Amino acid sequence: MSIAEYNPISMTDAVGASKLEELTLLANALPMLIVRINEEGCHCYNNQAYDDWFGLAPQGHYGKRLPELLGEKVYSEIHDRVQKAFAGEKQVFDTSLRHRDGSNRHVRVSYVPCVSALGKTEGIYIMTLDLTEYQQSQAEVQRLNAELERRVQERTAQLQATNHELEAFCYSVSHDLRAPLRSVRGFTEVLLEQYATQLDSRGQDFLRRVRDASSQMDKLVDDLLRLSRVSRSEIQCQDVHLSRLAEEIIAELKKAEPSRNVEVSLEPGLQCGGDERLLRLVLDNLLRNAWKFTSKRPDARIEFGWKKDGDPAFFVRDNGVGFDMIYENRLFGVFQRLHSASDYPGSGVGLAIVQL
Image (cartoon, rainbow, N blue to C red; front, top):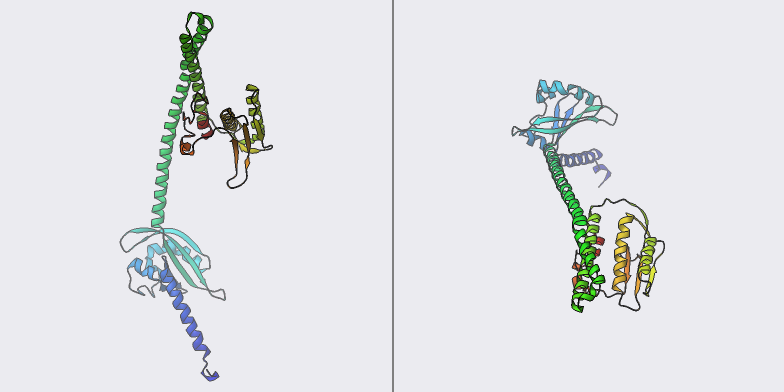
């Protein structure tokens, strides 16, 4: 291209027209109503959403003034806002706007001053966003929240009633059931001590079975009460020295069975945040289980420590009898036993307490 053929004005016009076309496409793609009011107060532009809202032909409102568009009554209500916008102050407010289908929609209106590069206000943009569906969804959310809160309150009341019933049941168990159990056990022991000579070996065996069964049932009632208290207790968080708790529990186990030879490895300095009473209960059940299920091994070993690899966790590990992994889903169930009571006595409640 020669210098003579170059026309800077036509190139500028072409770029301007391209930008204008791009902005028009953008404005027509927006879901809000956009109107341009010039400095004389006349409607000089609107996007497609505006025409669709009112059911207008293209440029149907061009050249009309705001009082003519809105009506004198409505214009008088917004007159002050319009004047402030022309003075350079942006205005944002919510109102209702009639749609072409006859419905009144809740909208948010913004009057945005159109300021030139020299700082002069050359008109305003009126942008209107339909908030009707948003408002309806908010109302629905509030209704659902209210319904959820009502259900939570009902459920809470039901749980409180159930807890009261459970407390009454626990009281009944601890007093009404344990008393006759201890009577059975007490009279059985008296019979064995004072009248054993009047019974043959078979009769003595029956009495010992009654005594052992009543003792086992008394322990089972204790474990059930413990399980009930754990499920209803309030958690009180604090710093807990787990290593020290483990040392105390192992010391109790060794004192109860001083003849046992068990290699115990407790990692020092382990701490965490939690309820000390509940964590002691967890450790007590796990370490007692480890102690019990290693009882038949001459090289019994129990470990308590912190696993750093993978998912970090505290652990209790032993080399006891173990269990078949196909039954792992039963391990933490109430009264679920994977070994016979004659080999490893217990109620089957300890791990259920740990899981809670």
